Image (cartoon, rainbow, N blue to C red; front, side, top):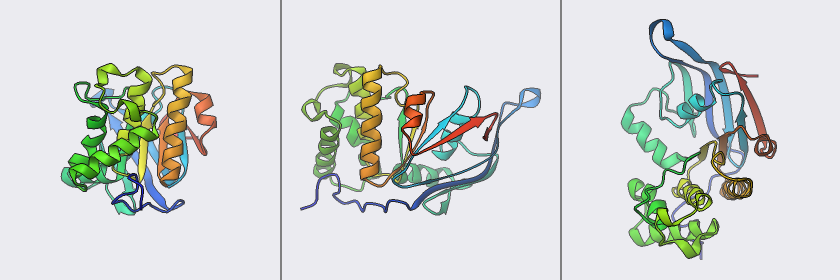
Length: 238
């Protein structure tokens, strides 16, 4: 019998190319205040690997992550998700691709605090619509158990600590079995103990499920534990 985490999903093969971007350019602002934030960035990520993007504030790290997550559009270059070019597709296709292929973990958990942990993890699955409600609930319970919150499934967001809320956010990011996990300073709002716990959970679960993890971090200890570290400066990898 298959586990709830695998139910109705086909695990991708570790090592397969999940994401590629080529010669990305992005400008922000208008007129004399226009800034060339990304200056021809190319990057690829394979399933089962954890990538850290590091660099000083303002170098373009978060801008790149938002482009890779299809939350913003590049001014030049291309983005491929699982072999499909997404950089110039319409909003409907981009929204569908985000729901099916990309999970997000941000510095702030962005939970719906008036809902339970279980309901928060079920939200991406409800939007995608692949599973029945009982199957969604079973998978959400299994994910919360995997991040150590199996006993707190029915607690509201307001009844969870900061570290627990971020663990719910990790479970939510994994809900639709995406090929890619994008994490923007996922431990930046946590203490040392919870930072290590959240990073360990995120990377272990993603590796077990053959997902590519791309995270932006200022934490050198976190970066050193990633498979690949890509330093950025002034809108380019160096």
